[in-house]
Length: 169
Image (tube, rainbow, N blue to C red):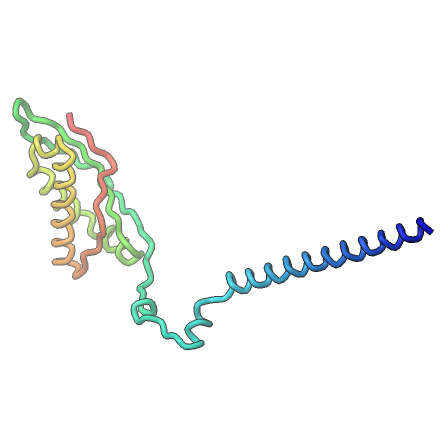
């Protein structure tokens, strides 16, 4: 008889283990379903239930791709220094947004080159030997190019002027 009692006790332990395993599986499945619902539900459902989106969120403009237009040749010019003349070489790229602005920039490269050369040749050795001076030359060249392109094309076209190479000897 002792053997039968032990068997019955073992059967109860197996039954409890099965119930616990089934309960754990159910909890994991419910947690997974709840997490999936939370992560996969969109904000549109919240808006439909009672809230309205801000007008600023609805009217967000699409960001256009950035394109880089390289000037066909580097700018090489002389500047007057304190002790001697120096030769400067600057490689320039224009950052534009959208294919339309890219084609406008490429079509007006001679105008852009002329404007940049005027700005660069007006700088001095002292300006180009410091970081702040280089940034000022970049800023001045941007302002001049945007102004001249706006005058001739009706659009500023470029977003930024980048110096991809700078040598001063």
